[in-house]
Image 1 (cartoon, rainbow, N blue to C red):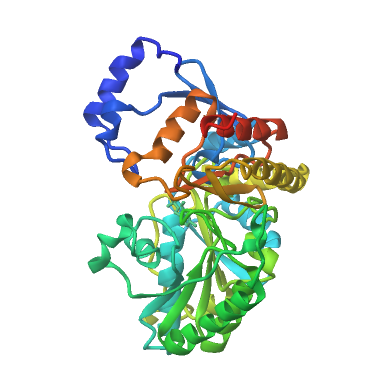
Image 2 (cartoon, rainbow, N blue to C red; image 1 turned 180 degrees about the vertical axis):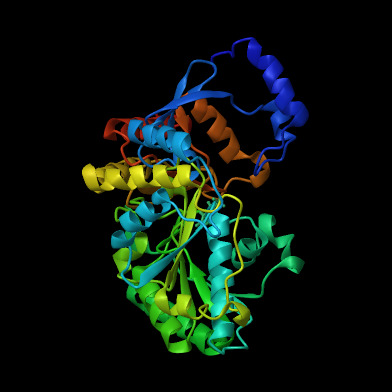
Length: 455
Ligand SMILES: Cc1ncc(COP(=O)(O)O)c(C=O)c1O
């Protein structure tokens, strides 16, 4: 049984019920299961108002990188907020933004020389899409009026980002009449990521996928302004891990057809996949790179879209030329967020953050190897610090009926056992902060086994 809430929370929850609209939520659900009150966070844990602590097994939507309330990030935040909290970035510049560019640039592919700031993952993607389209126009490519994207991709919730995300699911299908023109390419999942891989026929399937990719470009390459992809793993699409060889093929087809390659590392950046960027594992450099979430260590909203000098060059001209990139947000390059991002990147330099990610990756693989033994679990797999599997009804071997809301119930039950997980459809996954102690991951796997009825 969950520990009861202190009495003062009943009024606060009534206030929430009366006036708050939560994200990604059918609000009727909260009539029976009100939102869980949080009062704090410490390291890899969230502190609940009922006095319990839960492991933030999904890094609060994949944001929290070094743990909550990291003293160096908190102190950077306090110092910067007291000095220059915020100012407009059009016509001004400041040290935190410049330090951030200086710290980040050597960690990125060398061809990315220009940084454009915005606020969150969706806006980083909007910026990349608009930049790609405008750059194509300004280099004289008039007919490129659409984008390419992977099936099952997710790039955010603003309309441009939704347009290059997967159309067929309930979140985006509704908005179809309002969306960008987008051609979609299916890529297979990479069985080599599974803890018990079945590689029968894999080389032939990989060759066929490569061929499909070439056919796609022969068909659509001349009309695309850019192709956007989440490198190696489609996170919101259900932790679909796809082969690095196809990312390499994507790069070479984009080059052959004059299509910009946008890599969306909003979720995968900053060590989550074991390397600083996921795309490093395929040795692929994009023309445009989207970063957010872990950029500020997961503490404040901040994002960047990095572009090549060639793209930047297509916007250069006299003020009257009309070539400028006329885009910006009120909080573009917020100095406080930039200072926190600098503190987060300094940790990568001063402490063994990537070595921690490597250790966590091994623990994660062991955890999912353990889960793989459960009859409700299929396709247990991992990529770096991200572990995932598919949940089925052991009686039928098929996915649970969505109407039974198995994932939501698992989420709520897990909270009562000290663990935050939030399955995406039938995909159960863990993506905790990089410094999570291995023992906590082993514990999380045991908890999940118990909740699935195996322990
Ligand atoms: C790959 C990817 N791109 C973009 C976004 C959108 O980011 P935000 O929610 O910060 O707008 C997300 C969010 O989960 C994401 O996973």
